[in-house]
Length: 216
Image (cartoon, rainbow, N blue to C red; front, side, top):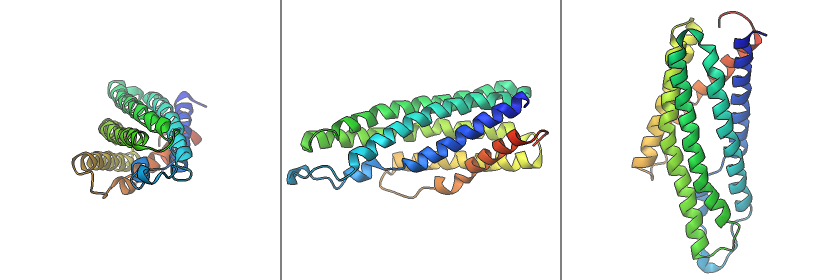
């Protein structure tokens, strides 16, 4: 298998693993902590500790996969290495921001391992909110990564140009969602679940490129 196909396979499998992990650990710790009332002396909601811990572990693995994908994408664009490196750096910056967000989530994990009281509930909520806010900020770098990847794909076949457009839309979706979340956190409208199609198209393109030789 030629080098480019091997790197496409690595990136494609990493994207696939990331998607599976994200779906398996999908959980909003902020929303889950809202109804918890320490005054009544209740325990944490059933399964909350395990869900928060699973989210932390899954997210940590995703951070590593993001770095793998960033590095694996660079060799796919040998004629535009400068732009390819910038694209990879943007994703690594996103991964670093995501990792920093996990430090906040770790505080929530630690707090939910103790008995529910005013202090542990406040610590858990602060950790969950810090996680979400920091992650939202990191998505600006991810949006830049998708935009640069779209620019790299634009100079190619019609299939690559279509993929480029979908990735540009996906990147814009993340920027819009992050801006809404940071400026108007009470608004629950999000566009990423729709614009996410660009990332799914990228996954299929990478696996297709790995599976067959030639220009695609």
